[in-house]
Image (tube, rainbow, N blue to C red):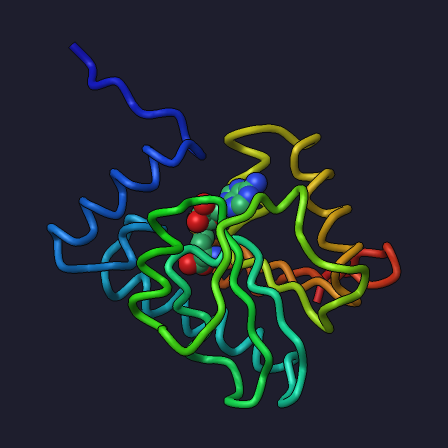
Length: 176
Ligand SMILES: C[S@@+](CC[C@H](N)C(=O)[O-])C[C@H]1O[C@@H](n2cnc3c(N)ncnc32)[C@H](O)[C@@H]1O
């Protein structure tokens, strides 16, 4: 009998991943089930990409922030807000980074005024949403990120292998 998988993007799915990550002593497993070495490679690439664009003083939305690791690698005086739909991941983020702001919200309907942020950074959210829900859901999320942020930086965990990521500005997407 094959084990039934919890549908992705329910709170239970991410809770189960978090429990498994804690048991294994590797918190990154909550968002990406790979070896420590692979996680280090992926996050080094994401850090480099983010630090190339996000500058001190910027207002940054970490869209689909997971347990919030990105909050620690941004320049110190960035104004950071992390948002995720998983209440358990948001609790984990708050415990790990108590001086940062984290909110449990849906990316397709965010509680922010227009252009509140200089950047919305999305690390491994686009592909995950398209593959597990639909392209239409992603378009809703993208439209909402474009509403609340001046620029959007999208990076996939697999991107470092291909050496590119995307910036969306004024509704136009470019590969960088
Ligand atoms: C693969 S994880 C990436 C987490 C984080 N960006 C990182 O790199 O560690 C994808 C995250 O997106 C969040 N997510 C996906 N769709 C979402 C939505 N519609 N609203 C809010 N969060 C969402 C999930 O809860 C999950 O934490």
